[in-house]
Length: 395
Length: 178
Image (tube, rainbow over all chains, first blue to last red; front, side, top):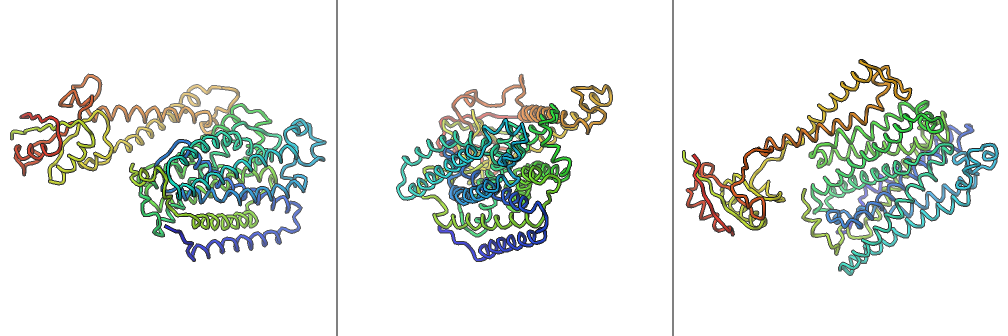
């Protein structure tokens, strides 16, 4: 069945973009005299770009995971996953764009290790400059992004090819490529989190940070997937996607929320227990100035899914899933915000028109691109070898 | 009233499932199915209600959470405040982070053991309890449907047997129960 974007969705995404632009513009004009304005714009763009980029990346990871494990039940929603992962090229563009601006501005107070004046007076950064310098950092960044992009193009091409040709040869090729992607992703997801987010708090380090970021992106991708599936079902597409499929994605949302909470808590508790000044600095900065926001964010991302999605019936209920999903999504945006803002703006950070504006702007773009991606291929894959299994999926 | 139990034996779970469907569509009440492994999708066919084990698991977990919280507070804060690595130990809340892993483990312990014991009790399969299944082969490679005449009063035993014989059974057995 071919998907057509409704006029309502077109207006809505356009409205989001317009509201986002207006909010950002007003925010910039109000704060024009603020000395921190450029940092604030860069920071909030980085937050929202990374957030939506990571949703696309999470979807690509989930697709590769499904290929590598030869999952059967997901076949009916595979095109939805691809639709979300299809944001990746645009996300990569956004990331590259903002990285170029930051690099040209010598870090722009976002990555202070890019600024030679700062490095000259800071022994800790100087010692790290073998790894954290512009050239090597860009090399790594381009390798991560290029790898993701190449794998995405391959998965998409084979997926469309499978619709035409069928057979199992493509399936086994996907199996191999999926496993290979997971190997790359395991290393790159961790390292890119260090490079893009952890290096903002350049004096601090945590080996767990990469998994923590990864868990957040996986969870956000699952939430977007379940929201998209519910939306399409409501419009009358996907007649064969039954409650069991929704229940399955709901379970992923529930499980990845716990994975995220577990990693957040592990990082927090180990640092709290060891109480080494160079490690506690990360949480100190967040607790001193963002106490309410920081712990509210944790509660939103942990308690809401735990209490509201625990029962079987809740994971099959469209209304509950939608509300909890939207709340978790906001929570994970806040999570990314709290990874970036305390390091760039310190106590001056505040969620204002600029932050909300850029988030809404990119949300509008993200939704529109995902919907456009869905129109480009049949919503149900035609020759997927597990299609029959997926249609009879029952749990 | 004398109750007659009919045991119909199958050697394939899919045949049993089709047979059960056929019997139920004729209005027969299947009282029990014995199988060496869980047969997927048999529950709605013979009208078994959804399990309530999950609710019990939640209650056991809540019980564990409460006991662990109260216990840790008493052991580590009230009765004998312990100074471990210079961590604050004056109130429970000061030290809550170090209690969370143990609380979590205890919650899981209570939920898991509570569930397992409830399951065994409810199924009457605690160690040492007499076996309920009519034929030892149902723990190997055979599947048995149990019908009771008392639950199917609109049919006679002969009618039931005739219907069962149509469903691809390999053996038929019956027993009088007082």
